[in-house]
Image (cartoon, rainbow, N blue to C red; front, top):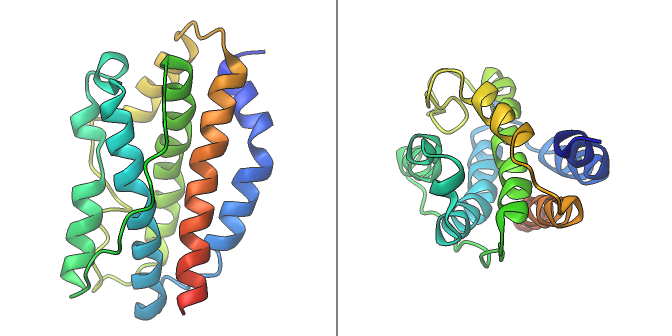
Length: 177
């Protein structure tokens, strides 16, 4: 089983939980949209910082173009909001954990592109519609498939940790609403 297939199969339950929680935000409602962005701001900066601290640039040389924290914070600022305190950074120790975390983070861009259609035109949505490198997802999947990671369990554990961070962030914002 390929790493991509293992990640998809062994994190499907996490993915479904995160989708269900984030599905509670109505992106056409400005209050919900702000809460949605705040939830992401609790997770994404922590995840991206942890990836950088662990050396993601070795695996994805175009990483700086893939980062979305600045887009997220710009959207929050454009809505006259302050970003929330980010959740604690996850720990990534090796290439397997980096690939597992990236699988979730890069995959969230696909979901974001679909969600961006629900955001009214007058609201900022650069976070959900990042421009990034052309063909970035195809490049990512190609590199994931060629990664040669033997520690599938480690990659899956890291992906599940990242999903859990997104889930916690959504729960915090939903509880505050």
